Image (cartoon, rainbow, N blue to C red; front, side, top):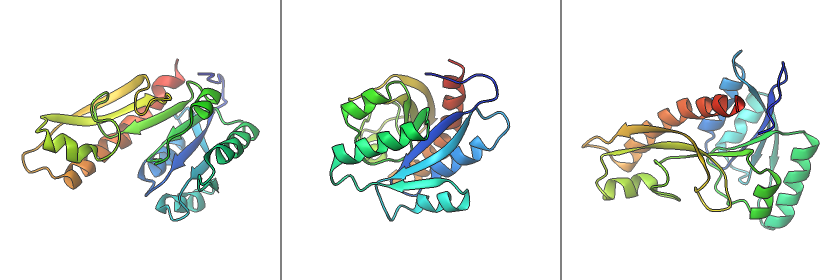
Length: 193
């Protein structure tokens, strides 16, 4: 991680597909005095992503790529990231899988947050699967992105106890609260590496 010292902050791009609650949380964290980074760019693959409203609210540049031609869109994104001198990519509910080539171009500088205790429950529908398997605990993980889905080096995790009356929806809400605490902590941790 090429972390900048002195007063310079890490320039981050956040990739989203949905509501953008982790994006909003990261933007709010970036405004704090102790924060080591700034959100300079928002990228989405979904024109209707609710999270895009935060670009307007916080006056952050946004770009939309539909990923119809993945390799072409990825090339365009890499060009923008280099032009903007982006140091770090934070995936926050981004529902597209980035290619090996893209990841190689940003090796060790792409983070993701996943709503399970990795390496368990990679992929989608994690809360439903956790409950079906009658797990006692679940949680969330911030990890570096590698070419294999949800398999990169783990930075930090937060474990929570599953309640008897939990449904996938209830569990998702409780895990999301922890995600909002964990992502900034993980960024602080890697900024000191």
